Length: 323
Image (cartoon, rainbow, N blue to C red):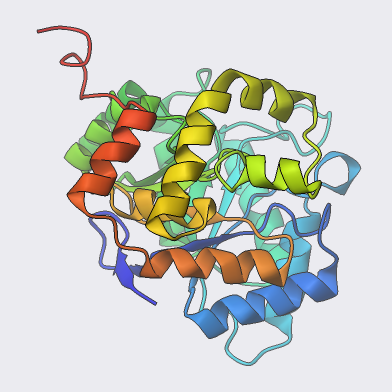
């Protein structure tokens, strides 16, 4: 396993992040525990979750599964760089969501209880809160840091100007501010290249891409469609229809390179200078094993250029749309 620093911090994390969103809804607890053990076996030390995972009436269930795994001992917590998130509503009652100082305090304590730990390494804002001033947010986070309940703060799904606003407010308080941004980023969805990635690089944030296979469309979907191992739901079917020509070229190129399409998609992200580590969210051991293969895929300039031809990206704004 390769390791790198998370943004401008001294914290070393694996080049792949274990995403846990499927733990509970798709993967039972025993299998989830064995997948987490296998991730440690591969050297993955960076785990990502969120307080809302489990969804609906089961919100918080994923954190509970991870907490039960930590409770089995064996240095599992100590070996894990633990990231979770807050923002989503945990109930229908007022102040049980978003980024008010009250919810930050309550949500953090609730996550710590479910996770059966006394601190979280990376506490992330799952979405920008347009109704809460950054002075309030940072004051609450500073208190949590002083209490030893969190070490670092990160964002998720922020625009470039949101990152700039957050960092300016933190600088006024002589506070570290954000150290990471978690965004959707893959060969098919590259809009973050316009402003989010440049902002992250400027402020020293590590970028953590989610949905690196774009819901499976970059994981050999056409071959799976032909052999009957995948049935696309309406949303996935519509996306495949819109991008079928690109996907056909992409899968043919992956075959030419001698790699699985999903391996190419992950490897491409690992070749992007702003990226710390993409999130892989396995439901099964086989999916985790497949993700590990991407670490051995090396793409030369010719291959990277061909991928840009199939899936055109963006230059930094405003150069992308101006002279």
